[in-house]
View 1 (cartoon, rainbow, N blue to C red):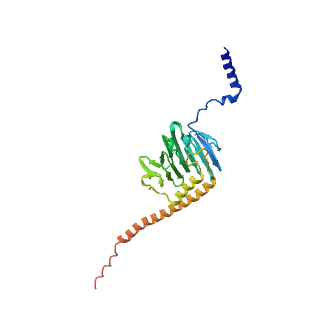
View 2 (cartoon, rainbow, N blue to C red; view 1 turned 135 degrees about the horizontal axis):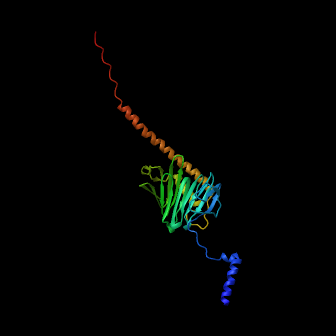
View 3 (cartoon, rainbow, N blue to C red; view 1 turned 90 degrees about the horizontal axis):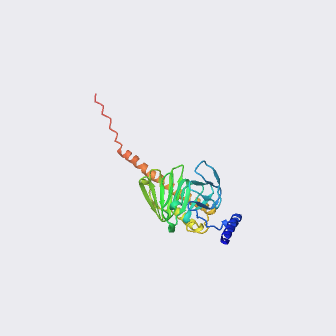
Length: 275
């Protein structure tokens, strides 16, 4: 009887004192992305419905079917369960479709650029990023993907591990130290090449100045780093653009030469009959 009274008294105290409730075991959240850091104008959309955007803040938890977006000179760092991370660059729109339930992750990059670290020690069942040009399948790696909504081009590079690209039944593999550019429905024609100096420098800079590229207790991103990365990306694009016109000219000159060579010689005018 005395034991029953004690238990009853403890129950009443639990209801009256909120602090006691906090002592109960907390169930870990397995399907939320946490905003670890941000700068500039960065926003979140918490539901799949109408575009209701609100300012983002460190500590925010984002559920499946939520989204984030940034303007110029803005960035977001997302940390998933098992310490997978995504660095969202400026002028980017990213949809979070699956964020950890059943150890599965799936994102849609509508436009802009992201960098991601996938923790090899906690290998996910699925970790995919889709752009309008291709789908990336990842298992334990450090990679970068961007998508230009105007040109329809997706650029990606791998700093560690291997990434598999997919368009329908066509696949390509990109290994550490390599990069590629993909257009819609043209994955079979995409060339996997060694990273140029600007891309290599970009990865070196990110590893040196930001902590999200490996498991970290309190990962951060830097706006100053973003500025340097932007400059390196512009340098990379100049190299790509310089290569394309050269190829176009060499291809265009060949038919012209052939046409000139194939041009028949003018026939001599027939002699007039003598009177």
